[in-house]
Image (cartoon, rainbow, N blue to C red; front, top):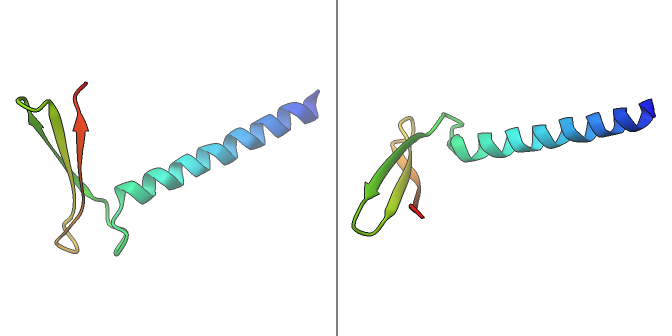
Length: 70
């Protein structure tokens, strides 16, 4: 039984590290690895949130995406 628990624990820890790696990749600049500044603007008429990811080190917008409020 202990062996099964260890396998589950190992699998969970590996998955957590995958998630951390993914989050770092979307929240850091791909060119210089600096944290990105995220700017969110809400458009009430279209019910959209516009997200802009900006790197102040590179002086570059690296991502622009619209998200629905609903």
